Image (cartoon, rainbow, N blue to C red; front, side, top):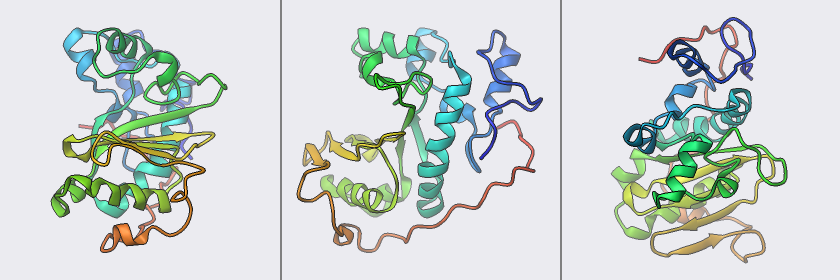
Length: 230
């Protein structure tokens, strides 16, 4: 795994300059993802609230697990992913919650979109909202989101999934103690599966017939040099 340090080998701290933020964005989380990929926020941009991790080391550690264990296999299998919403700073998320901008409370979002805040149980986690262009190109019925949900359930160590109507975008979470719950705000709305439900275990391959087989991502070489994303 890639050390959560900058190019000079120093532990990352919250940037207090533009140059420092550039350096933080260069941190490579996995083969195809850098921290900078996850720092964009419409709330932060529009309301001019810096979306910068308070605890970069924790954000990087959680983000690496999210990228290596969930996003890299998805991208290797389905092609390029579209990142809708990644990391949220506590300040950005709090503002979004208080102003009804589709953000939960900071307590509920810790170890989720707030990568650098452990949850109530002291656990680490990270989440990102993504869309999969492959799905958009191949399926068109409102309920087809379940196909991808069951594929992920059967193949990847996700902690939670939550699907939305537009672009079938969904939150996918990595967590130290995964609950493996899937829900949707699109028909059929509600909990698709969770531990204890009859459909949680077993084979769900009938849902994703015709899907590509899981492709193992290319192993990242530690010798590879970090580069600045364009």
